[in-house]
View: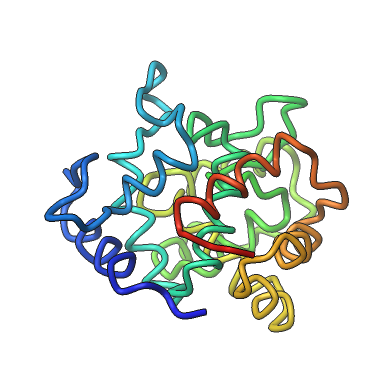
Length: 212
């Protein structure tokens, strides 16, 4: 399934400005529109230290999808469904329950994936010298803090999908089916797609007009 032209245009447009509007522009849905449909609580933020609204997250996700070459509608829908659920509609950047050290970003990925993600970013290389997977909890949280600024926080989902999930799983998600989403969830360690998690995927399918 190819990404619809309007959807791709929306991502490209949203990536051009941090002030991407919530409403569609000339009939073209913006990245912020898709996020709002999938993560309805992202319309507002109380805790501005960690929380980001759909308008703030839209251009950042657009940039990240382009950076990691995720252009298929169903793949983008799956990544947004996962990250929206894991971060409680982008309200948190770190795991608050049970509070696992080193777990966070919009993808809420666990250690050692946080370290692997940080190591993949050239700008952070100098700060990771000598860091291994077996560091103590304080160091894990220090590394997490390196990748939670906005320019990295929203890239973790696309990064994980394109580097940690097999080609077979990436291809399966392209179909936009529940089975493909289940395979994606297995890649991130989710064996039981609960009804509340599935609600996010269903909203994502609706937002991207997926029929699977």
